[in-house]
Length: 124
Image 1 (tube, rainbow, N blue to C red):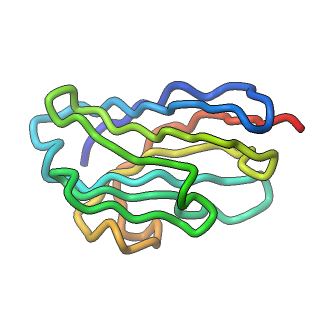
Image 2 (image 1 turned 120 degrees about the horizontal axis):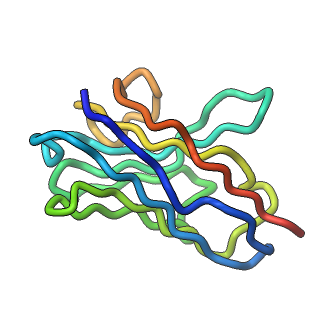
Image 3 (image 1 turned 90 degrees about the vertical axis):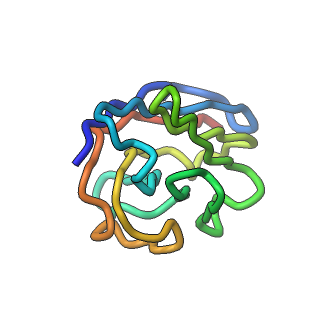
């Protein structure tokens, strides 16, 4: 497992942008598939985006395609989620996760390391 800490959440107006960061500890960060999930209170946590260990492969939920970009810097042991053209329905707690599976696997069961979450609120 890897220890993960998210940052970058906040309040933004619809149409605006935010960049979330997730800093990891440990020596083997580049071996981990990293993902971003989000959760609205009272609803299940849902997949947003995933990226393979070396960054060659990315996957996105339909709701994120064309607006969000996942990336990683293995030297800095950090994964990012650039969110553009934000909508009020993007409001949620966003979680960073690490796992050993394919970034195309959207189940949270594929990830065994989780951050504490960061709140993103998009006002209309």
